[in-house]
Image (cartoon, rainbow, N blue to C red):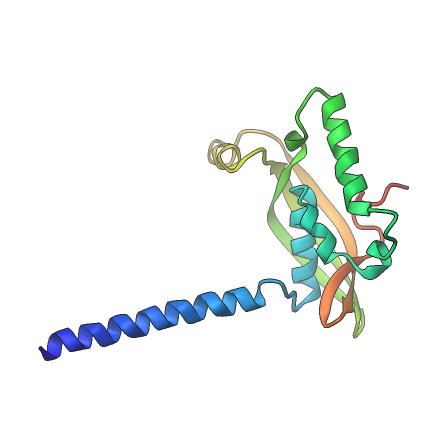
Length: 166
């Protein structure tokens, strides 16, 4: 009986540890503790055409309620895809081999240079098959993003990629 009791205790500890791990991951999921993490998260969302990228933009870009910069960008990309004869999902890209170099300007501002490769990512299966068989072209990403601290979170500011039409 003592052996069965030990197994129950070990199983209980493992279950509690898993639950605690899930809670801790969930608590830290929305926070970007470093400028590089914020720049990488924004870049991934930007190239995946994820509207949630708006949450990673500073208030300087998103404060004008009349101008929905992210919505306008997604509409512009969808129109380009349709003009080329494709569905808007054709423009989705996934980043790989992300290299970040952070230069702190002051304690609340940083310039993050991002170098990466992007590959077409219509759906997860396409991306996996393309990666395994080395299908499709890869495109280089080489840009510098300005990241500022707002409300204890790092947010992308300035002119990130081609988000804001000039």
